[in-house]
Length: 119
Image 1 (cartoon, helix red, strand yellow):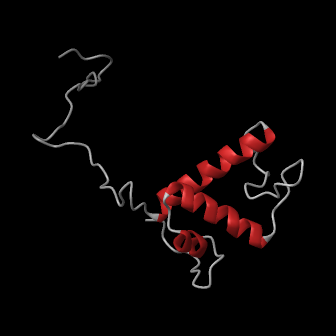
Image 2: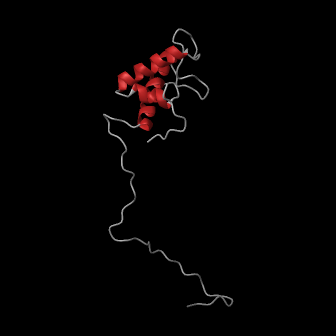
Image 3: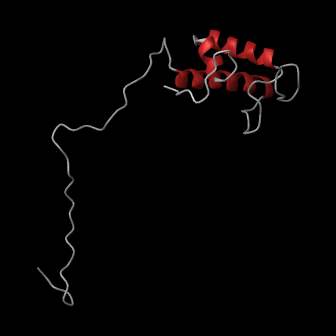
């Protein structure tokens, strides 16, 4: 081994430490396509509303745009609570989602629980 100015050179190790048969951890699915968890339901609800928004206004919503908007207006203005419920119901029906679960998670149902886990 060479010595440079009284020091030993650093060893360079290129060997990867692996255990036989070890595979990367993969999170088990918490739901199925026919019975989505709250997280997946929220993604489907949001995707549905994005599509409706794009159809109505010809663009994707920006950060401060309302996803639940008054359809009679020419710009995205927040819908009434009743209309928001109707829009959530329409998205749930179109995507096979549980309306009550969505309403509860969004804090719009009688049994809403704040801080409820997504999955």
